[in-house]
Length: 206
Image (tube, rainbow, N blue to C red; front, side):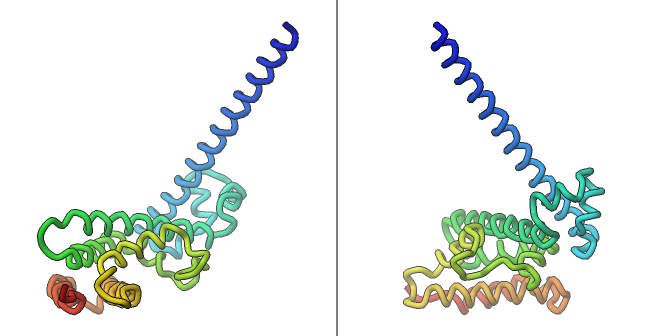
């Protein structure tokens, strides 16, 4: 009886400890998401120069040490935002690629890419910030970034022995259009015309 009671007490203690650990993890994930969301909100309204650890601390009522505990630095926060952005653009491109029953899949993906960049300019800006140590095309490249690129690669895979290079050139073209539009070097009025011309360049005979 004593052994049985001790066993059940031990199990109850372990279950309680597991529940506490799970709650702490959920709380940590919720705080992390809240910090990222606040950073994005401030950036879209006021620009990235106003996204500081102090400002975020005031915005969401967490102490600065809490923010540092989650991300290590301001750059860590921006990097987390950028990675989240790549996950979102990857999902947008995947949706655009898969929804085409008839018509040009390349055109659908190109339009989705440029729409994403236009609708979230601050997010798109930080995704390609040179000041962040988020590696591209590297063993340490985050899976979210690989996922986004895989949606472009899927457009050209099997069409050429250089499908990866073609995908990179297509991405570079889209990024150039997005950036030149964001910085008002390109007018939005001719965007559809640009997309059609780009699609012609990247449509290969089957």
